[in-house]
Image (tube, rainbow, N blue to C red; front, top):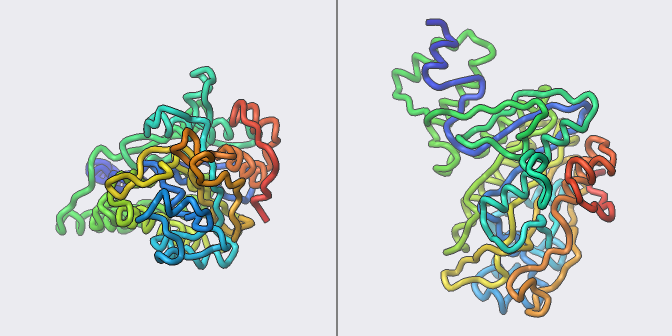
Length: 381
C-alpha cells in the first residue's frame, strides 16, 4: 500500500480534519480575499453589540446586555462590545473591525433555524427553486468572467448551501472522526514524512484529533488557519460556519464559547494571512436575531433583527453602520423583536462590488435576485 492509499484508508485526504464545521473555498481573479462565516444558531446581536445608550435596553433585559457598567466595552458612546469579545478590541482600534446593526435577511415569521439559514446562504426568498437552491457565492462565481473553480472543502457532514450550485466547486466531508492511538499516529507521521503535499495537512489533522475538534471547544482557530492557507494560494473566497449561538438559556455564560471561537479564529486568520490581511474582508452573518426581551431562563428566543460583524485589513472599520430603530415597545417589530432597517444582503453585495468589482446590476439581478442594495456604505478603504 502506498502512502496515499494508507491515508485514504484512515479517512485522511488533502484536507483531513475531524467532523467540525463546514468550510468551502473558491478561486477568483484579482488579489482581494473574502471570508464568509455563517454563525449558526442565531447570534444575539443585541448582546454581542449592546445598544446601551438606548433607554429601552435595561427594561427589556434586566440581566443581559447591560453595557459598560456590566463589563462590556464601549465602542462609540452608543454601543458596547460584549466582554467575551474583548480580544477583538485591537482590531477595532486598528480600524479592522466593524458592525452593521438592525439588519436581517428577508426571512420572516417562521423562526426556523433551517429555513433561516437556507435564506441566508441562498441569498434569496420567493424565487424559483432553480435559483433559490443555489448559494449566492456560487452565483457570484458563475457571473464573473475569468473565474475558475477550485476545490470547495466542507469540513463536516453537511456541505454549505452558500457555495452549492452549477459553478465549479467540490466538497469533502469525513466519514467519521479521527481517533488515533499513539502508535498509529506515529506510523501515520512516518509514512507521510517525505510527502511535501500531505505532511503539513496530516499534522494539522493529528493536532485537531488531539484537541477534539471545534465542537468540543478546541481547534476552531485552526479552521481559520486552514482557510488562511488556502487564501495564501489560489483561493480568493472562503466560507465556513461556527455553531453554538442558540442561547435560549443562561446566555450570560453560553456566549463565552462561540464568542471565544470567533475571536480566536479572526485573530488566527489575521496572523496567518500576514500581508494578505490588508486585502481581506470577513463577513460574519447569522440567520436571524433574537427577541428584544430576555426570557425567564435568562436567555433569548428566536427573533428578527440582529447584527453582523465585519473584519479585515481591507475594511474601513472602527465604525458601526445602522439606522437605529429604537427599543421602545412601539418601535419593535410585532412588539417583540428588533426591527431590521437594512437587508444584511446589501452589505454582502457592496462587499462584493468593492472587493471584486462586480457590477451592481449583476449583484441585484443575479447574485441576490430582487435585492435593492441602497446607499453605498463605503465598506472598503
